[in-house]
Length: 189
Image 1: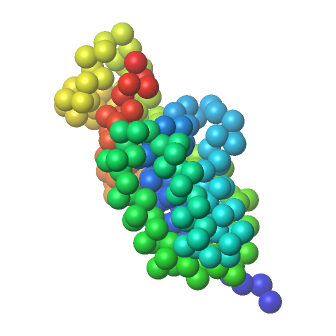
Image 2 (image 1 turned 90 degrees about the horizontal axis):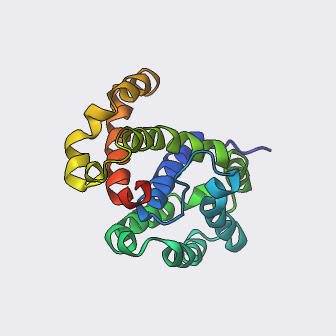
């Protein structure tokens, strides 16, 4: 008998996972959308593999966390460590989605690239558009300038994305894109 894949819960998991990786910085998720698929999938796939290998969410997460912390940006690792704890808490509360559930793990492995790309696309579109609009103006990549000018600068992209994602989701995307740009502004110089 086939077990149903719980796509709603897996969508929630992916959002938390990708947000965590994005906030931790470094090269945990690619800056450019034109990177090879393996650049998008590496760290999420490592987590899924560790959970599957141990058939235990907590053991798999701890093994994966060690690797992620080694590869995260030094500054962001300290500031964003609570994001890892949020992910761990979610995983422990939903361990029944993963332990003994190869159907969910296999579904995630097969849909991982599309899920990561879907998460990153609007965020990288906005941060890249801001950086491109301010090319040659390093002062525009200072935190205060980004916080003051981000929405105005990327307004045409916001309107396009609003049509696709709706009002509720676009606000969260804007906040995450702006935070990413502030945290990674040195990468856009």
